[in-house]
Length: 131
Image (cartoon, rainbow, N blue to C red; front, side):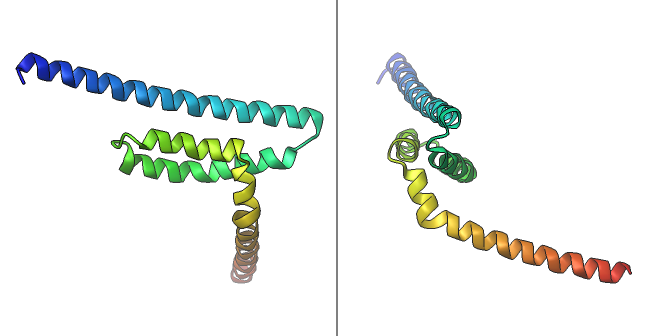
């Protein structure tokens, strides 16, 4: 290809990638705003609070994982689509509730009990040594 053709191809490629990323980010933002709206409505009506609280907990736990994945997969064209699909699963298929009920709730409870036990032991040792 001639130099001008190469420049044009590079510009078109970067434009397409920018558009694809912008579309994915727009969809992600829209779904998060939708979840926030549904959470607000359920709080006002006192209905389905548990479902949306589960969503926000799972989303908060997923954010650091997503940040790590971003470092490795940002250059792949399918990655924004994957992020949209994960969020769509969490929001629309009640995937967050499934993940919470099937895995997270029990393991977080075990972890919290262990942390509280270790803290109590640490506190007891520290008061013994300071006395």
